Image (cartoon, rainbow, N blue to C red):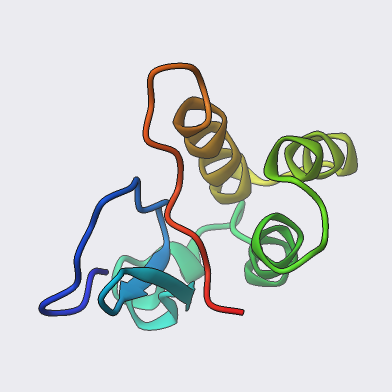
Length: 102
């Protein structure tokens, strides 16, 4: 979800909240995940998605290194979707993902 009046100058990953000027990622959109029915999916693991998000955006690792660590650790479908999006976002000729709040 993107908050009102947010300047979006980079890619916003799936399942994330973005707000501010300049736009920053605030965390996972828990309400949107529930409304979408993902929590009822047998393959969905919110704790895994949260730990993957923390690894990608809150750790001291560079995103490309964090992606490698996350993929080696094993992922469910939602965490895989997040990682695939970020891989594409950091590829050549792309804007890259929106940074997170510290």
